[in-house]
Every structure is written in structure tokens, then in C-alpha cells.
Image 1 (cartoon, rainbow, N blue to C red):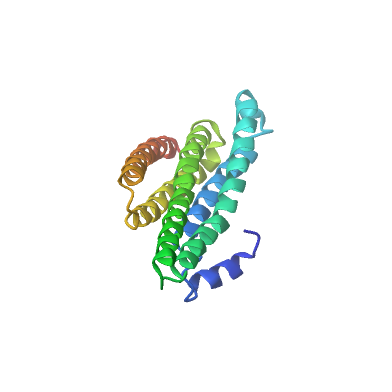
Image 2 (image 1 turned 90 degrees about the vertical axis):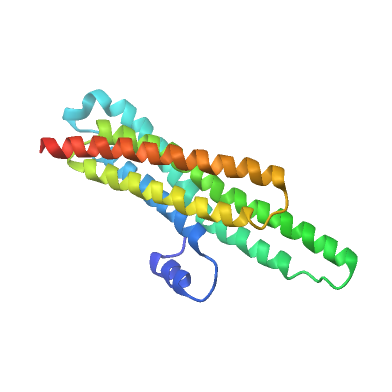
Length: 208
């Protein structure tokens, strides 16, 4: 996604169903990653944090890579949704057409499920980076690390809703069961990581 923020928000607010919640979840991930990068940039080069400079340079490279991936997923979610709509619009007058349409819907829905699931997985990686900067980054920006974690967890929760609603439309018990378990695992991990980061942030705030 390379459109301006205002253009994206106008499109989001319109009657068009896409971009929607899935793209917003990916955007939340991008915002979280960008905040982590900011804390890194406010730490690297400071004498006070010379002992963690190499580590946070590495964190910065990873967070910027994740930010790029989240940004791509904003658009990919919309594309995946549109493919589902295109599949539903296929003709269904004859039995062969019905079979072709059903297969197209199934495959498009699976793809639309995997995109927000990818957002969730990237968020876990990004939360690990947010935890690192909360613990070792510039203490003047510790609350930014906390906001990063909140945005990333919101992204996990939001993307999880999109995965679940897509799974509800699939008649593939094995795929659905596998992905449902994955979603619950990612949600639990994200919640635990958020709690740990918030504890680090609170500890820093109590010292001020």
C-alpha cells in the first residue's frame, strides 16, 4: 500500500467492504513495528546505551523488515477478499458451473484465511522486538514500546477475527481444525507477550 493515509481512510470509511478489518489489522501491525523502529533510532548512537547498540541495530533491521511485510499485507488482504467476491460471482446455472464455482470459492476463502493468519504470525515476531526495546531501549521512549505492543496485540486480535470468519465459510474440517488451533495458540502467545511488555513499561514508569 503506497496511497496516502487520508486516501486509505476515505476508502476505508466508504461503503466498499474492502479494505476492511483485515487491512486495518495489518496496518496496526505496521504501526507497532514502526514504533519499535523509532525506539531503536532514539537509542542507537547514545553513549548511555552503547552496550546494547549492536543488539538494537539488529532489532531495527528486523522491525523495518516486518513493517514492510505488514504494509504489503494491507493490500494483500483487500486483494484476497476481492478474489472471494469474484468467486461468488461466477455462474452457477449448470452442474459443472456449480462445481467450478464451489471450488473457486473454497480456494479463494482459504487464501483469504492465510493472509490474516500471516499477519498474526508476524505480530508475534514483532512483539518479541517490542519487548527487547522496552527492556533495553531508551527509557524516555518506554511508553512508545508499550504502545507498539498494544498495536501489535490489537493486530493479532483483529486478524484472528478475520481468520475465524473465513473458516466459518469452509467445508474442510481438517483445514479448519488445524487453523483454529493455530489461531488460539497465537492469541494466547500474544496476550502473554503483551502482559510481559506492559510489566516492563510499568516498572520503568514507577522509577520516574
